[in-house]
Image (cartoon, rainbow, N blue to C red):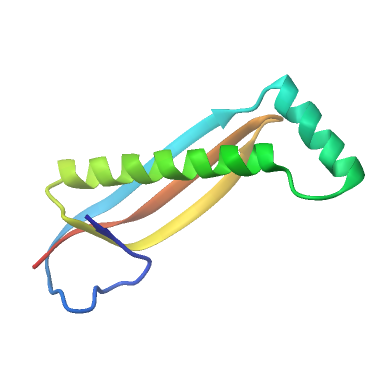
Amino acid sequence: MIITTTQTIEGHRITAYHGLVVGEVIMGSNVVRDFMASITDVIGGRSGVYETKLADARVEASRELEERARAMGANAVVGVDLDYEVVGDSMLMVSISGTAVTVE
């Protein structure tokens, strides 16, 4: 499956548009992760705990996007947009959306 932020795929012709496809993941934090991140906030530096959580959420949302695109009969997704949102005090939402297409 080809997944790209561009509207076209070089060397391929789009033969069918299947519509909007979205992969979304909402992941919660926990007390230990919040405590470790607060220490990083005080002393400075990167929060590896949250970076790992973000990466996991992005991978899972990408997997969901791909599965949904395949279910629509697509073999590619174009015009992909990636968004991160904080939901409430400790929830993270990662949303990846694009247009499911068939290319040859």
